[in-house]
Image 1 (cartoon, rainbow, N blue to C red):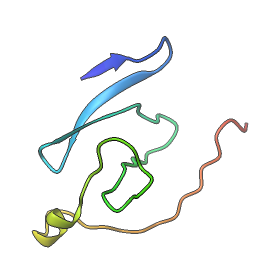
Image 2: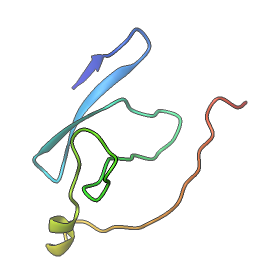
Image 3: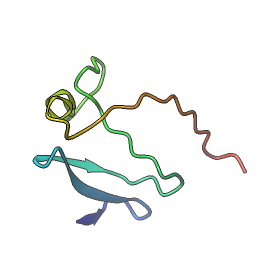
Length: 73
């Protein structure tokens, strides 16, 4: 489900881990998705705890640092 957040931004509701509903403004410039994880101490809003899903082999965690610069042509 998408909704118009502003005239030029659209928000999207999606589910992480089958039941945790989250809301995001999709980044159409990349193929990456980032969500706030449970260990983040300075994050606000809903956080996703991946550990229970890793324990059940329903998820894996690959750590990669990605730096994306926006606004440059």
